[in-house]
Image (cartoon, rainbow over the protein chains, first blue to last red):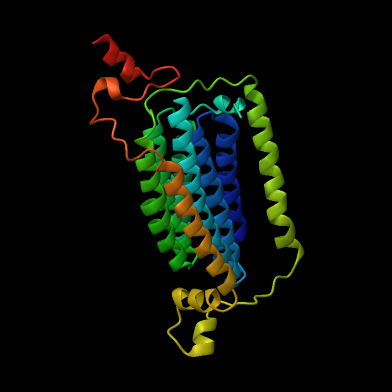
Length: 101
Length: 202
């Protein structure tokens, strides 16, 4: 009994579903960012697993670039979130419905 | 055998931690469990012989991203609960299930269908340049030959993100509200937070 590629892909899918569930279910904007991080990490596991079981390094390269994109997404997103909170005093997703030009 | 035990242990821990993140109402619990889940995920990278990716995972996610969230949360009123009522709760489960099935199909289709040949096989650094055989050497060779341009673009993107984050979050940072007198604090044109109401009562 050993761990195969399908086990890793199944785990990756479960984690992605957890993140997706959070993104659909939660109304806190901070939780939305956390869910995005979970989904990105789930994909990273799949990339690294395919990279190992096919003996190719390309999967790891893409995982690196996903990490870089996630880091810059957090920097910009958190800045926007702070700006939004200063203006509206809430992190509720429903408050985004009125943009007020 | 060790790999099997480690895989199932860390799979269980990761799923539990991320479930806590998604389901809890407390933002601080969510942040802590997310950081723990990130550490546990790096264990998978070490299991998959992607040592450098595991180290980057710990440094970037737990070191930088989680610290950024922790500092960002100091700006937020993170204790107050947000009304999470959703008009149709079954819809979320349904949509999530559908999306998960689609993701499984997307992942499985090319893996089963094609015989993938390795363009950049593991151990190429040792073959090409006679260095020590290791993941970090391989990553270095591939990253600075084939993926050099995306690497530089990613560097520029990180710089842009840093400047953007500073500009967005840093507005009016030169005014210190804590050192002002009460009547100098700029009036806010929306409803007050709990702490302000408490101050008014006193």
